[in-house]
Picture (cartoon, rainbow, N blue to C red):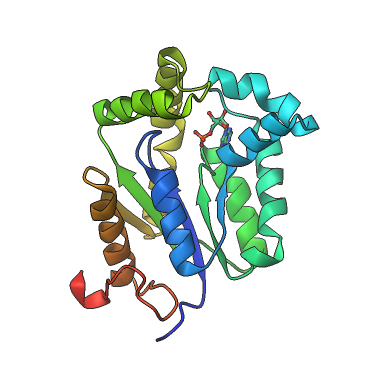
Length: 211
Ligand code: AMP
């Protein structure tokens, strides 16, 4: 029944890897907020806020919102009370500049990421899932052309940030192909091997011994 003292996570994977869904499950189990920059931007676009107006065209093209704006948004969010013991970042950092911003922010508070969950999904599989999501959710950035742009940016700018975290030995590499439950179980088992377990209750029936 030991409580993990801190649970600062980042989930990384290509669009369509299921990281949004898995990220919510991990965040819920550990009792920390999920902070997904894409969701925050989309809410602002929908709500017609100043921020929304600034980022709308960028998001629709599948390009990246400038680092300064994105990093400030995340810092503001992580300074809120509910993120004091931990958080799960989804979709940020997305390039080296953002990694530097995040690391500067965290180290200024004497903190660091406890685990970076890397969801590995082959490109073809991501594309298939994104096409399905386009049908299911009607997201304006799930068109063929924009999907290709977003995946290219992922491969060029986001995937390399994993090297930074590999050096810090915090990356857990998860095979993202399988059913939702299978992938969830892999994630919890891998976190458990690093001593990272949800508060007392084993929400997913996993224990360190099962890994
Ligand atoms: P996502 O839902 O994570 O795929 O994000 C949707 C869109 O929001 C991206 O295609 C970008 O335009 C923008 N976005 C989300 N997170 C970031 C970030 N960390 N840096 C820059 N742009 C972002």
